Every structure is written in structure tokens, then in C-alpha cells.
Amino acid sequence: MARITKKVTTKKTTPFSTELMGYIKEGQIARKKFLDLSEDLKRISPKDKFPHHYIYSQAGLGKSHTVKTTFEKAKITNYDIFGAGLSINGLINRLAVIVMNLKKNEHHYIYLEDCTSLLRKEEDLNILKNILNDERCISYNKNPSRILNDATPTQREALKHFMSNSNGIRIPTDKLIFILTSNRKLPTQDEIRTKIDEDLYALRSRFNTFDFYMNPSIMWGYITDVIMNTNAVSKSIPQKVKIDACQFMFDNWSSLNERSIRFVQKMIEKYEKYPKEYISKWESEFKK
Image (cartoon, rainbow, N blue to C red; front, side):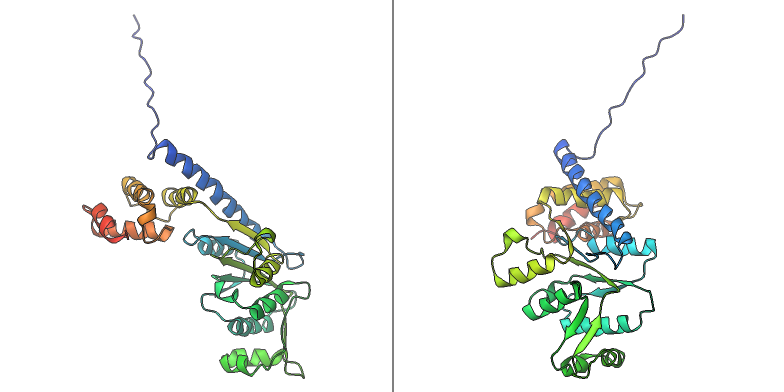
């Protein structure tokens, strides 16, 4: 008689609880939206009515990395300007050189990361609005000596190229596409409370604006999805360690010094140095 064997099925297990897997799923949805947006950047034309993009999210979610990777993969010419501490004069100096060297029928992406320092003064916001509106130019009608004094020799020559007889500066920006990322959300129409809010909203209306705010649970799911399913952490790191790191981050969220992809990478680095006592190291070094 033929022997009857029963097929044994193994139940698929998940590394996290059902609750946490739900947060990861929500994080994956948020991350897909961001990845889809970054892919859309490749289809922008300076002839579009609203070619410029402003992307907001909390710090630590990899905005800059995603945008830069998109440009690299698509082989898109772009100028990356780090905005932290950048003054409006410094931005004008850099843009003058870029525009002066543009070839006929050529356009460039200007990627301005961490642009918060440019969003504090009404005068600076007015200059930014002029760059983005229908006129699309930098208009600086004050005495330019201050800008010239801060400029490098190359920037000074470029600025002089765009100076008028009245010593004002006018730099066309119609061939530039601006992509700004920031940890500061531009107010919506319903969030206007002050005069500076009005100016920031006017700036928002000139961008294609994308707000990627996430509550702590979804933000944790987003970061965990990156850690578990991308090359953000080396493949040589055991799966258990990555799970431990993400679980530790969730369990101690409110008492952590930071909450970001980089934070988990620091935890993994600590594991590599102390593979037998990494959790105790995390407890002593990464909590407030």
C-alpha cells in the first residue's frame, strides 16, 4: 500500500508584532509617495507654469539622498547648493555664475537643500518670489557693493555681467528649475497667522509643494522600511541586529537623542564595534 504523507506547511512569521507591521506598511505607503515624487522630477520642464518644487518632511528621512540619487540615475545636470546658513547674497552670487555659463537652449536644476535660513526675512522672501514668479529673474536694486564684497573673483565677474547702468542687478532665472527640500513647512492658506506667514504662503503658492509630515508611528515605519529593505545598512549585518535596532528605536522613541535613518546607522556601527554588548551600548549612549 502506498504510504500517504501529509504535507506540512510552515506558518510565515514576521520579525515584528502585528501592530508594528501595520506601522511599517503605512511607512511604506508614505515612502512610495516620496519615491514617486522624486521620479516625477525627471519630467519637469522650465516651460511648465509651476516647474519648481518644495519638499517638506521631518529631518532624518533621507530627502536629500533620494533627490540626489534620482538626479544621478537619470544623469540630470544639477547644481547642489547646501542652504544651511546660506544668505540671500550668497545664493545670488552662486546663481550669477551658473546663469552666465548656461549655454543656449540649456537648462539646469538647482537643488537647494536645507533652505530654512532663506525663509526668515521679508526682503529675502521677496527676492525668492521674484525668482519663481512669471517674471523669473533675480532683481536686486540696492547698492550691490555689499554683494560684490562678499563674492569670489569669479562671482564678482558674473555679477558685473548682470549689472545695469543704474548699478542694479538683474539675473534671468527662466532656464533654472529649483528643487528645495526643508524641515520647515510652508503654511497653507488656513494656517496664516502673521505677516511672515503671508509671505511664506505667497512663496508656497509659487511652488509645487509637497508636505510629508508623519506622526511618530508612521515615521518609525518609514525608517524601519528603509533599514530592512534597502542598502542603507550593509547586507553583512545580521537580520536580527537590524530588527533589534528598529525595535529599540520604537520602544525608546520619546527618550532618544535623535530619530532618523542616520541614527539607526550609528547604532549599527556601535554593534560592529561591540557585537556582544551592543544593546547595552545603545542603552547607555543613545538615550537622553
